[in-house]
Length: 313
Image (cartoon, rainbow, N blue to C red):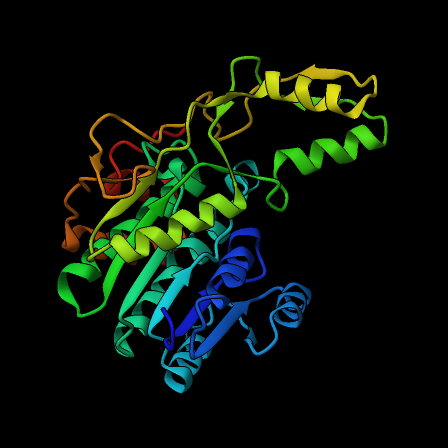
């Protein structure tokens, strides 16, 4: 990516900021960092001297178009998203507005201004989604699939599981509570998740971009899922403190186990990166459902029409 213009949305977040740190080493012509978090974007732009920061909201179509028109990025890494599953279950309209229509704004600008390659940062929660967050991310993948088939921009999606120590994730939350001597909660003794360090996840994202020709959904081999209760016990033991572990119930939208590798993956030249055969997207149905979602009514029902394996209560 040397001498290319690279734009990262969500650049103040855990994944976006690590993408910025690793991509700046590729010596791009210009590194464009975009986020609605003013303090976060200030911090990462100060850290990476020579980068170009933007305080901007991806749901503001005019603002996004202005940036694309002026700077004409060659590569876009779209990491901006609302990601907290239980919170988004109670904020359905915001999840759709940001994760679907914000993504659509960035995608449309990328196509209009001839971006070479667009990388959509997705999640294992898009597989047979049980949450509004997972369903909205699956719609983002579908938008990218359709655009890849009909435009000159190459679109790839990258799915992975939980990232260790990402902002707002379970480990920093637990460590803060343990330091304060407060109990930590595990929502179910059988709950398990895939984990990867931020650095390794981002390295694989960049590798996937190099491999991708367009239209792929990439998944990573993240090893075996980790039992959350066992992980909690390890963190408490590590701290040297006596802290109670409280067992609760799964929160809205949560699964006991996430699905990442299903056995139908196709190997790539990188041993940790696989592609999956994406389901064909009915472009006409997608357009109809996007129009319906804009009314802000019957959101879950509309998503179910578009994603038949979306399971919600």
